Image 1 (cartoon, helix red, strand yellow):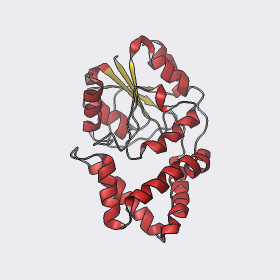
Image 2 (cartoon, rainbow, N blue to C red):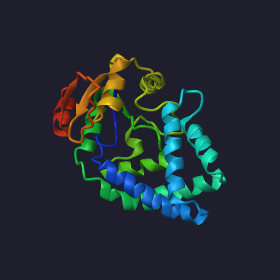
Image 3 (spheres, rainbow, N blue to C red):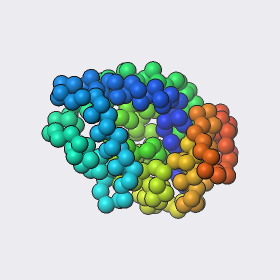
Length: 233
């Protein structure tokens, strides 16, 4: 293997995603209330803008796709909004949303094992957030600098489960799909999509997302099992 890719939420970072979404929108609505934006309208705009990212075909960055759609629903000065969001991710997001996650003392162990033999290690989180939102990585004891490459909405033009997200990563890393190992907890977004382009995959089952229509055939196990797997590579 020349590259090992890690998903973040539910893989490196144990996360109650439903609670995460609930608290995220609650806290974000408080921040945007000073702009007299109703919470329902804000939620609608963010979901629509996120869906626009998922549909992105590579002709623009995910950041551009997100804000173009957002502004079409809520006409507001984007520069001031982005400033407010930057502060939100550094403060309310980091402190209030931490309760959605639990500790994973093995996350740093896994990343360090992946780095053996000069391999490239990537944080392949779905790039629907700005890089500021990756502050949640600190909840695992890791930092952006622990990775050779990190995906976020400013440096990506595709997202999961689009197979082109994985092909684009291979191009940026200068590796072939067969030289990569994708590690994730979501059968559709992580495993099915990555394996469809020829990547090797490992399904982490601690916070598993399954789908009846996704037939995945790869090695799987708990995060502790993953550690043993990485020791053999």
